[in-house]
Length: 264
Image 1 (cartoon, rainbow, N blue to C red):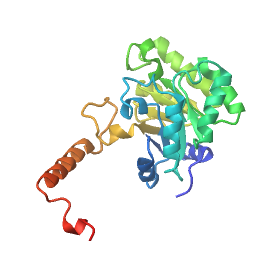
Image 2 (tube, rainbow, N blue to C red):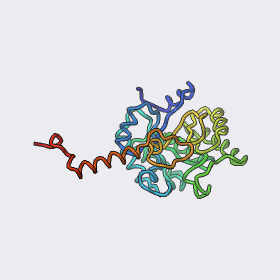
Image 3 (cartoon, helix red, strand yellow):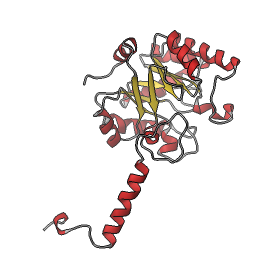
Image 4 (cartoon, rainbow, N blue to C red):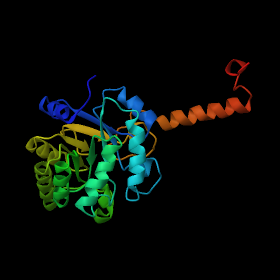
């Protein structure tokens, strides 16, 4: 399988083939994902919640993003690797945004993703001018949950619908190579996808985008409760619990290790 690049992603959209994208936060999982045909691997700031146990993504630092991006990069050769810019790493100013994005590129990311609409357009333009590829992210933006009052579907009222449409066009003009549309009505996502020449990636935005993204821990069934848009493809939580219970039983009953599993 050939290396996935930005031109390749644009070709996939033109060919009307769906783009596949998953989050990843560690070397071992990255190796496994890279053996599949996954197109994009995202080191998401969602690591704050699913790896580090934070209440939301807001506490995630640049140091944590760099640490996990380094680990994932060591396991990825074929998929396209993107890293999130965490909260307050790009909102302060353009100079800080370029510096922080550059750090992620230096440790192996091939592009960065940041949240926001027209308000971050000038930052995106500066990043692109600095030869840093950018993926946009609009709709429900987790770094703005306090403004939204929680994790709520966006774009159901006319005012917000028009804002999301406008933001999508502005980000495209600013130079993003793709946009994540999170938790917006599927008909709105469908319209935006038709209007843009760049790929749209759905995160709870329905089936009509150019691609889909999920948090790997949700897909693998680590949690009993998941958002409506998540499909659990395996109940890995139960598999792990069963395996660990069997291990505990074998150790306590002196069935592990056997002599064949011991050195002479």
